Length: 231
Ligand code: ADE
Image (cartoon, rainbow, N blue to C red; front, side):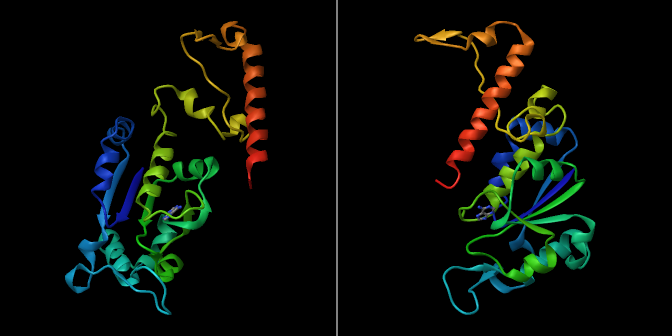
């Protein structure tokens, strides 16, 4: 899998790629490259952004700058790109990232992630160069970089072998095998701490009862989540 991240802050990704699970994915054939918009700007003094027409706060990433960076990377008119690979603009108003979308993206051979900065993108970038907008939550970050890392982290842990145990990612929160529900609670040693006992069933060695207990706890958590939505 190839992931290209377009950003004004490629150095942020040095920390991310230095983490062991990311390093393992990179050693196992994932290629993650950063492209700095600023290195491709056709404007003087490294300008990449500008004030919004019609007024308003903040700065927007310019369409000519993003076009130039995409052209330099792929050697084609970037309006062609969404037909060749998924080009994702990270933006607070995009499709919310969830387990189903992560699964979908993990199946792609190549991804392009566009990080916005300041107030975000000139809308023509999204309209003409991107296949979609993706959000990691309904709040505004100062840029798409952390969102890109969240997306990559969620993708990379789906890769076979990434977690050292194939079952770990198959049966985790919101996966199809849990019917989209959150995962059940986990416990490890000691079996008792300050009088807080691990549920007896988990110590019973009775696989069916354990599986049933886990399904019930998972459903309970889903109920609780549904109850808290909108609060
Ligand atoms: N850029 C700024 N805020 C964002 C968010 N919540 N999700 C994705 N990209 C963003």
